[in-house]
Amino acid sequence: MNKLFALAFLVLAISATGAYAQRNVTPAIDRDPIMEADAKHNLDVAWNYYSLKKAYKATLMRFEETFAAYPDFSKIDEFLFIGGMSSYYLSEGKGKQPVDLKKEKDKEKFTPEKLRESAKMYLTMLVDKYPDSKYVTDAKKTLSVLNTEK
Image (cartoon, rainbow, N blue to C red; front, side, top):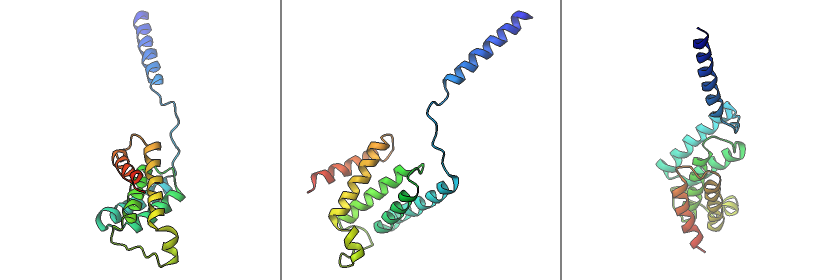
């Protein structure tokens, strides 16, 4: 009986040690559930603007608002991607929302040069900070195009 008890204790001790060794050493980011839900809603709306409506200006505004308020959002890599791509497409004159450079507000932010600079910044941030993101390959392709342009 003592041998059976000792064997059970040994098995329990070994399995507990294995579970301890598998423990995540780096602490997870403590995310605010309310901010996370709000950012997720903004991301869903931004994807709608981006993919369905080709409203790149609205997509960019949603991204920048969310990024400024909650840069630790769990899906910020997606936001960086659509923010960077929206900037790129706007710099190329694409999309269904025209940029009116006669308006002072648009002139400050939406010149092709500033948009290309923003696209490079957002896509580079995506590639550097989130190398395992599924958007990295497309971001690198767009960055190579942006880096060959003057």
